[in-house]
Image 1 (cartoon, helix red, strand yellow):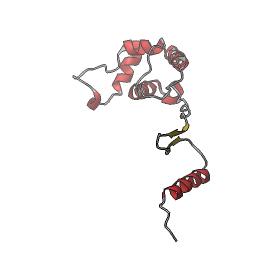
Image 2: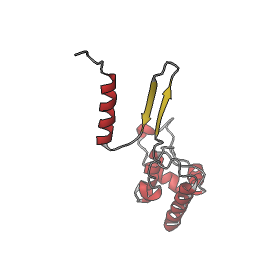
Image 3: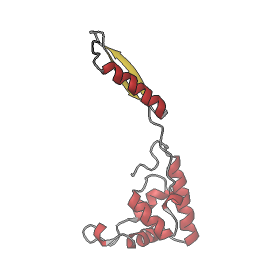
Length: 142
């Protein structure tokens, strides 16, 4: 898997399976025919042990059942064999928002460790950073 749809559950695989089956039906192709056509597009440098069919019909069948997600390379060869863009078969899902955390941990000696991993406006970030830096700067006696 290449992470295009991480966190999307199995719905994206079912949708991919429906799109793939529709395109096969439109062309009157079997899984074996698509495997053969897609394998023709795999460069010699990517073939192992001089295999003729790099993408097996069992994989195409699994994709049609919504059981597997193709690698980026397989998706590219399959889409090209079908004459479509890879994203039309398996759209790139938006990334899940990062978990943001901010916490203060006070130790027994009275010092506090700040752990901040949040997304904020640049002006806010610079203000917080300046405040922390000024607290870390040793005070000089005048």
